Image 1: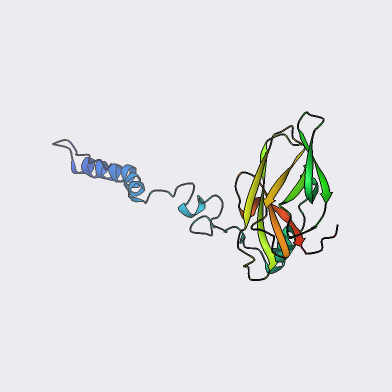
Image 2 (image 1 turned 30 degrees about the horizontal axis):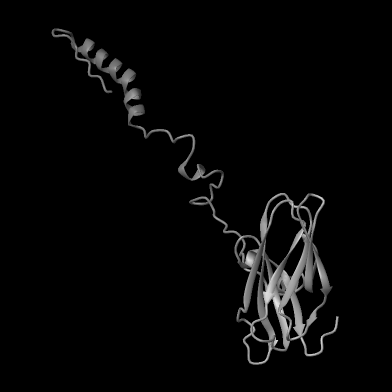
Length: 217
């Protein structure tokens, strides 16, 4: 703030000059200082970007693409085109099964006449499996497709079956019924899923069996 000092009435010319000089010498620096621009803040706007002062904003690097390379897709497809492992320590097709009580008083399924080749007149095809110990219930789901059947689309679903495994169950089975009076001759595949719904994430592997007029073990 600028201050104006006025000399008293009747003061001599010398006194007036003296007062003028004093007021100029004392208060001009204050005036000059008050007219200077405000000092810069401690942090400049471009220095408050979390250390990235050379950027106008925080640099953003998007995550790497989640798309898989052709080689990775090929390896995954090969892995899923094989019998499932992991929680399964035994899985096989059979003409029948027997049920027994396991060590934890759960269900243990024993395959009867295991085979990969069935006659066309077989009423059922069973997929029997044993699993490792688990601490939560889940479902095993099987989807049956015609792999190489004359006149049939290999992507057309024939049948789906699912079984619920309690924590005390050591295994189970999937049952696929004969689609008509006889099974068409050819190769079939069963896609195995673990969970409570079918999606690409919970696919575990693939099993195959054949139907031939002269079945062999």
